[in-house]
Length: 196
Length: 116
Image 1 (cartoon, rainbow over the protein chains, first blue to last red):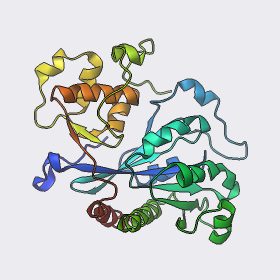
Image 2 (tube, one colour):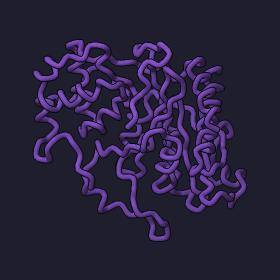
Image 3 (cartoon, rainbow over the protein chains, first blue to last red):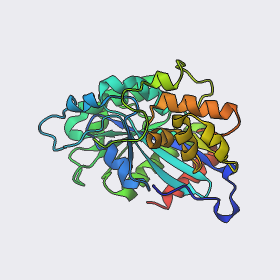
């Protein structure tokens, strides 16, 4: 793994700081892909909270072509400038991991909640969490799995019963530039909320 | 399954933690930690193996989550060992800026815009 920049241009280590954006959503919705697309380090999967046994139990619907599963959380890193690092944390999707979401979300700039229009119900829990149980700005992003939208965003908003103040966007999260745009939407929304 | 460094599977985390289950300082998972400019090889040699691994890893500044993953230690234990080293002044934490800080948000915006 490449190191963080070692005081380039006279930036002192003590000035280094970090920020965090959480990438949430249902199981198999593309959180790992999104984090991996933009991270400058290979997305790290930490199994800190679990035992390997669970890997045998978690299975996606047979219709979903996904061989590996996210067993805990993934995280990635994006260097923003010489003294600011952005960390991305993908939430663990399985219901039994929900209690640790509070820990992941604490101190976050905001959250990007991914949804799959072919399986909206899969992300209901994440939407519900950010609507009711968390205190961070959040943006919902329809993952365009094959680069095409299958539903109008207004239909998705209705189906998710999203409040009007929650931004809804769409992006092909395999593309790092699209992920950056989606994260930008989170930061913009956070700035609006911070202003008031 | 990839073999990871860290605790032997027979060693439960509470053994290394000597029975303690909570740490005092609120270390967020993205908080940056480093040894600063004063890495001390003599101190390193005197530490228990898990703490020593963590101390060595922290020579390069990284987040609590990275330390946990790189050392193969559970997050809770990682936080505990970090706070122990903080107490004896051997690690530095670089507290994240408030997520409401407009200057921080502006820097994030500029940095992300370059990637779009």
